[in-house]
Length: 257
Image (cartoon, rainbow, N blue to C red; front, top):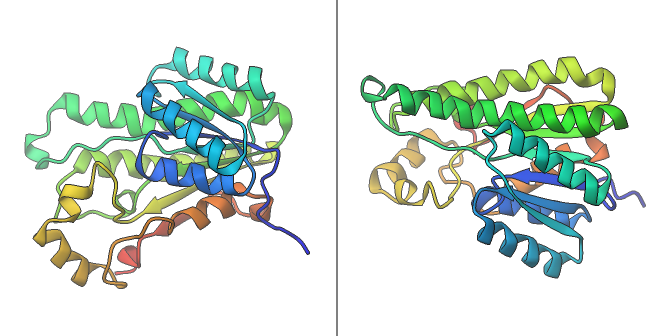
C-alpha cells in the first residue's frame, strides 16, 4: 500500500514558524515524517515550537532566529540548515505582516515595509534555498503562503499594501515555477482565507466580521485549525510531482464569488 504523502527523511523549512498557521503546517509536515526547521524572529517561541514538535512526532528539529528581510541572515540560515541536515527538500514561505488602514492614510513606510516583508522576504528565502540546496539537488518543493487577498480586493478591511504584496507573491510563484521547473523544483502558492491567528483573532471575533462571514463565504464560516494542513502536505509531497505554478485558495469559497 502506497503512502503518497510520506515525507520521511525530508527536511522542511518553515518561516513565520513561531505562532499560528506556520506552527500548524510545521506540525502537519512533522506528522508525515519530515524534519522541521522552525524559522522566525522570536527565538524563545521557535525554540519552544521545535522542542514540542520533536517530542510529539519524534522527528529532528532545528530552530533558527532570522529576519527574512535581511539577505545576509537568510543566507546564513540556509547555510546552517545545510550544515546540520545536508539538504532542504521543502520550503514553506509563511512569514508575513499586515498593515490595515485606508489607502489614503497609508504611509510610504507602511507600504514599502509590507512589500519588503511579504514579497521581498518570500523571494529572498526562495532564492537562497533554490541556489544553495534545491538546484544542486535537482529537486524541491516551495510553497508560498499568499492570501485570498492576493487574488481579490475587499471592502471590509482596508489593506491595499497587503493586497499588493500578496498579489506579488501570487505572480512571483508563477514566475519561479516557470523558471525553476527545469531543475525539478515545484513552486506553488496557497491562498488562505480567514483563519484564526494571533494577528487576526480580534478582527475575526468582531460582530461585523462574523456577519460578513455569513454573506461573503459560501461555507458561512472561518477556516478551522488543520484545514490548511492537507494542502501543505500535498504540495510538499512527491504526490504533487506534476503540480507547479498553481495558486490554491483555501478560503471556504470566498474567491468563487
